[in-house]
Every structure is written in structure tokens, then in C-alpha cells.
Amino acid sequence: MGEKIKKIKKLKKIRIHREGTDTLLWGFIGIAAIALLLWRCDTKWPFWLFVVAFGAIYLIVVNFYRCPIRYFPSEDTDGVVVAPADGKVVVIEEVEENTYFHDRRLMISIFMSPLNVHANWFPVDGKVKFVHHQDGNFHKAWLPKASEENERSDVMITTPDGTDVLCRQIAGAMARRIVTYAKEGEDCYIDEHLGFIKLGSRVDVYLPLDSEVCVKMGQSTTGDQTVIAKLAERELA
Image (cartoon, rainbow, N blue to C red; front, side, top):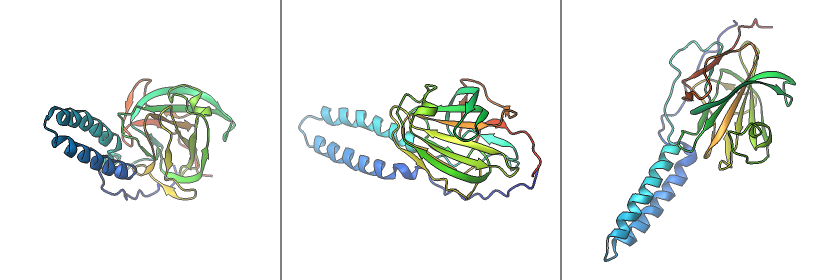
């Protein structure tokens, strides 16, 4: 199947995603300052009500920005397509992709709720062919039209055997900020972060029709761990 790219494990050992560092820091300072003022009141129930309510909200935000340290359990990643995100499989179907491929492709879509980790991983090993950001609408991410009409960021990856795989980050009704770390021309590997999407959103992966699907509709996925498909073997040109 061609020479395997040697995987380089270079993820930093972090627990909170860098996209959330400032939000969590200033949020904590704000909550602490208000709690201190309420503590000085003669009656303590406003303090405890505030601490319980906003403490719960803060923990939800911490959960949203957590950044699990993950490594794919096998060194053999030839032909493997992993889930680029935590979430639930909402689409497995053949579609007409007329933006780049101009033919039919297998699309697997993963929807991320606000409670999921929102870091995105590269689905395959390879090289980034290009990165393209497209402004658009903010329909609910699970709707079919979201894939074509919503604001999105497209990352095309060429695997070692020459197969092109498209990974599309899609904004949702609440998610209005897509961050993409992938850069054109760089080598990329499973285990590395492709980007981050804030709040509920979706990631589509477009594969050749002869790919073997390894997930089912409604199945929960874990980014960088769940194998969603396997690419057919191809000879190097």
C-alpha cells in the first residue's frame, strides 16, 4: 500500500484547550468577585444561590473546553479513518460533491452537542492539500442544508497512497467561530488537532465510494479513537 508515513506524536500534554484559557480565567475571576461581594451581605442565601447556579454553569464550560490527551491505540493507521470529533453520527450517505470532487462521495457526518468536547482531530494521516474557509448561514447543524449553506472550513488531505479525503468543519445555530489549525502543505497525522469549533456544531468527512463504513447511524463517536471507515487499498501512482 505504499510506504507508511512515520507518525510523530507531538501533542502537548494539556487538559484545557487553548481556545478556552482566557474564557475560563476571566469567567473564574468574575464569578469569584461577585461571590465575594455577596458573601459580605448580611443574608447568605444570595451567595449560596449564586455559587450553586454559576458554579454549575462554569463546570459545563470547563467540560466544553477540556482537551483529552488521546492517542490512536494502534500504530497501523494505513487506510484508517478516525472520527474527527466527539459526538453522534447523523449522516451516512452517498452525496454529489460538486465543490471539489465533482462526483459522488460517501459522506459521514458527526454532530457535536454543547456538552461534547469540541476539539477536532485529523481523520487520516497524510498531507494537507489546501484549507478553504467559506462564509455562510448558521442553520441548525444537524439539518442536511447545513453542509452546503452554513459557514464552514474545508480541509483537503491527501493520504500516502494519493487518496483525497475532505474534512469539513461546519458552524451551527450557536457555533459562530470555527478555528482551523491545518495549514496547506504540512504533513498531518491522526492524533493531531485539526481545529476547534465553539458550541454545537458538526464535522463532515467525504470519502471515496468504495470505502468501508465502520459506524452506524446514531452511534456515539470519540474523536481520534472511533474508526468510522476504512479506505480501499490503492497502488501508488
